[in-house]
Amino acid sequence: MALLRIRLTGSDDAARAVMNLLQSLDGIEHVEEIGDLMTHMDDADSSSAGLSDVEGPQMHEIEIDVPNESTERKVRDAIEALAFDLEALVEFEDDEDDK
Image (cartoon, rainbow, N blue to C red; front, side, top):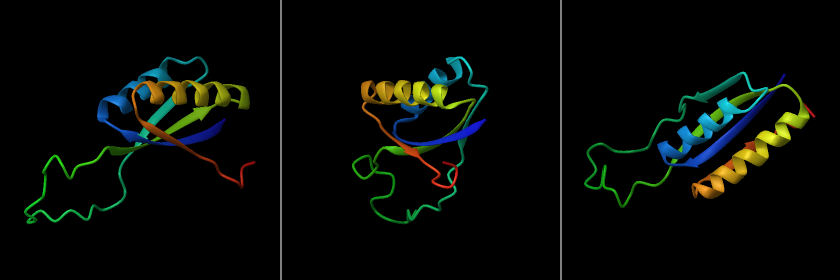
C-alpha cells in the first residue's frame, strides 16, 4: 500500500467532510488526521489574540493508505472536487523517493 498525504486548508467541517468521503471510498482502509506538530506563534497576552479578523482557515494534515495507483488517482480526483465545492485548498504531498 502507498501512503498519500494531503494538507487541507479550510474549516474543521471541510476536513470532516473530506475524511468522511475518504472513508466511504472502496479500497481505502485507513484514513487519519495527523496532529499539528508545529508550535503556534500566538501570544496569549496579545491584544489581538483570538479575534476573528486575525484567524484564518485552519490547516489539516491527513494520511491515506491507498492500495494502488488507480485508487490513488480516484482519491485525488474526489478530494479535489469536494475541496473545490467546500471552498477549501488541498495540497498533495509527493515523496519523490517513492516514485
